[in-house]
Amino acid sequence: MKRLRARDFTADRAWGAERLALFGSTGVSLHWTDRPYRWHRNTGDEVFVVLDGRVEMKYREDGEEKSMQLEAGDALTIGDGEEHVAHPVGEARILVIEDINSE
View 1 (tube, rainbow, N blue to C red):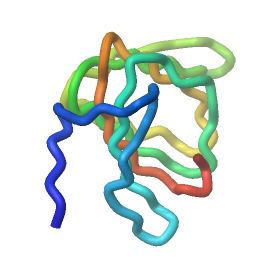
View 2 (spheres, rainbow, N blue to C red):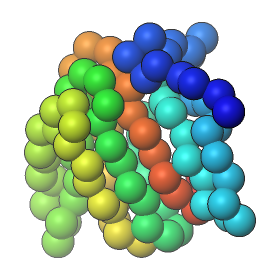
View 3 (spheres, helix red, strand yellow):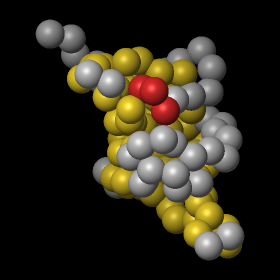
View 4 (cartoon, rainbow, N blue to C red):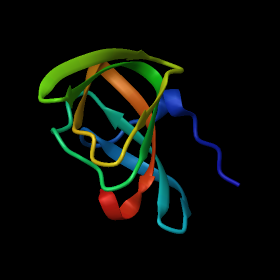
């Protein structure tokens, strides 16, 4: 058994992570960041949960860029192949559940 306080978690680089669990090819990780990720598409579904902070999630739908604001406690499911990029507003801690083969 291992306890981890999400609000106290930091990493030595943006999007640094602590792997919390691995279920077959499904990884559960806690990420810390203070910088945007990069535009990408996952091969497989992803669950993105903001545990601390705020994140602007940008995505493309029918070639048009859109965005939504995610607050602590918000969860988002991102489907296979959906193009997206996360932009934290300050520091954020995020739980990500995804197929590790799509990282």
